[in-house]
Image 1 (spheres, rainbow over the protein chains, first blue to last red):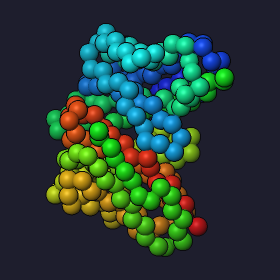
Image 2: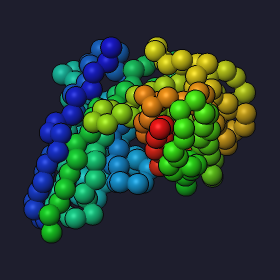
Image 3: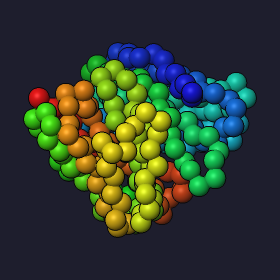
Image 4: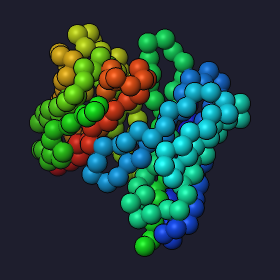
Length: 114
Length: 117
């Protein structure tokens, strides 16, 4: 059984604050770690796919890091804006030829207060 | 690019009836589609993986005769919940791979909320 844990479950921040969330996953047979941003009533939107230990990716004010040896990834949001309010999901996949099945965490729900 | 639609967005049905949910890739050919469901306060759980033109592969604990999956074309997969019961009430969401991006990148539909009364 694969367990992907995300923390915190939810948080509220003031507009302009920076914040970060954690995703932990099994480190054995690692293939890729995905971050998604999911707004209510919309499709989950892919933010990052990371595969290499030490990977750091950035998209605007959002960035992510990956440590495959210890099995964790951090997502950072700099200068949070109300439009950043969403649930952030991480998902892990194991290397298996021809299969890219994702195991998801429960998500971190972010609310940015104007 | 890489847009996936799902229909309907919500449905209410009576116990014992069947419900069909459609998942379409609008601007790319989806070689593989995945079906997930999410119960309240839980994570998205993979139900099955389907490749165009072949039988779906179901995850442990998912009844293949109850959740019928058809992936007859590269742009359409359907999930039929047969003889639905209240415990099947859940949020069902599909994803697809095969776009211009990474092979392992999954593009999600917006989901379908099923309520069985």
